[in-house]
Length: 325
Image (cartoon, helix red, strand yellow):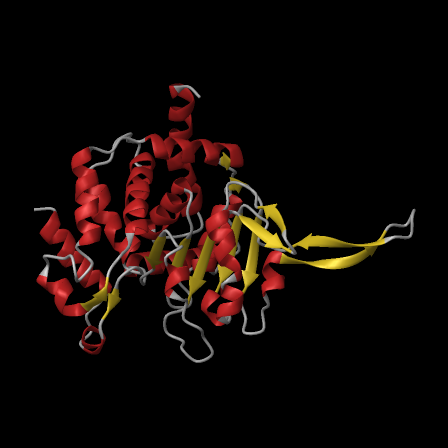
C-alpha cells in the first residue's frame, strides 16, 4: 500500500468525527477514545450514568462505517448461546438425513454493542472472552472465525448495583480502554435539548469501509515511537505495581498494578491517537493522555483507598506526574 493511500485514509478521519458529531453533541474525548480503540484493533468499555448517549454513540459510529452491526441487550437470564449461537437439528430434504447446523449468534458482526454488560452473570460474560482475545468462537469442537475488523463496545451503568454482576478482573483486562462519560456542559446540554426535541433527524454518510479500517489498523502499528517513549511507557506501567514502584502514593493505596498487557495497550493507543491527529509518530502527550483510560481498570485499590475516596485516576495522575519529569 502506498503513502498516498495512507494519507487519503487518514484524511477521512476528521470527516468520520464530523459525521458522528451530527448526532452526538459534546463528548469529544469519548468519541476520540472510541475511534482510538477502533484504529488500535481492540475493544472498549463505556461507563456513564443513564442518558449520556452511550448506546447512541455506538450505533452512530456503526452507521458511519460500512460494516455489520449487532446490539446485544444483556439481561440476568441471557445465556452464552444467545451470544455466540447454537446448533439446531436440520434435515436434508433430498436424502432425509438429519444433521446439526450451527446458527451464528449476534457476536458475528464487525461492530458489537454489548449493552449493560454488568446485568448478566459471569458465565454469560465469559462467552465474550474467547471472542475478544482470539477473534473466533469454538462450538462443539469447531472453530468459527469472527469477521474482521471486529470491535466490541460494552456499556455499563455505574450507579445501579442491585441485580448487577461486576465484571471479573480477567475480563476487564481484555478491554483496551475503560472510557468514562461525564455530564455535558451547560451549552452542550442546551444544544442537545434543542436538537433532539424537534422533527429534524440528521442524515449520516458512510465514511469508511471494512477494508479501510483494516488498512488504518495496519498503518497504526507502523507509526513510529522512540526508544525514549517506550521506556517512559514501561516506567509508567511498572510504577503502578506496589512491589516495584518508587511512587509512595502507589505503595500506600494500591493492592496490585497493571500487567504487561497494559504497556502494549498504551503503546498501541498512543499510535492510534497519533493517526487520529494526522501524525505518524508518537509524542509524550499521547502517552500522558491515554494513560488514564488504559490503566484505570488495571489497578486494584486497597480497602483504605476505597474508604477514603481515592480513585484509580488519582493514582495514575501521581504516577504520570512522577515519571514524566
